[in-house]
Length: 321
Image (tube, rainbow, N blue to C red; front, side):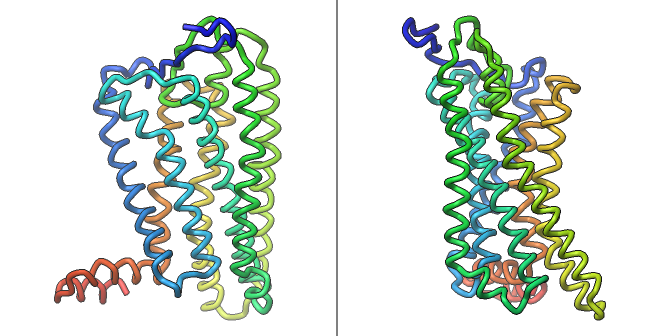
């Protein structure tokens, strides 16, 4: 199993969901449906926003970045998970496992940074509307995207090197559906305290800081909105932030629960929850924005009706617009 010079296995065995092997095929059905819906929804958002110049505004560009991150996050894990469930393809190379670790955490960190940027965008739009166009310009969005990618690369790359330095001479069996930093580190035959501390520090300094800044932004937004004299203006402001708030809840609450409670819940539940966490937010995000954002809904329906205009298509467009 091991290379005599590096003490690395040639491959790991991803066992799927231990104890539910007989139900793997049944479990794969909702997983596959959610993954397909995620790809369709996020691809539609990316296509609609990128092909309409009127949507080339910071709010929509951030949304397109979020959809791209969602596609990356789910596509890094779900195809391999389905291959385990359908074909019993449990093997993943050592390099392939480290690559999966990198992209899972990279996509997660990037998405957190994008959600923080979207919170700042809403803060500027509502709390400082007169300077919004100059503060949150397309140039600002580009720089924000570069910083988010650079930050994610810098904080995730050490995980790969920390795993690569560990010897794996005892077992190469991972009781999970995908390679995650600590699930791989626990198989090592040496002390992994550095990995544990690194994971905690990175989580606190990135995800923790992002959450605090997002909460601070929305606290300021709520205070400003409550001071508005017009109930119609308050309703419009709250409606503008509703989509983003739902996405934040879907992203951070399950992550926080998984991080805190994984030691106190069964392994089977933890693995199922970890997979749903990879699948549900990417599937729900385009649905939330498609329902709540009128402009995106209208543009998407227009694209569907443009190919073959007919009375039914025009009626559907009129109904949703």
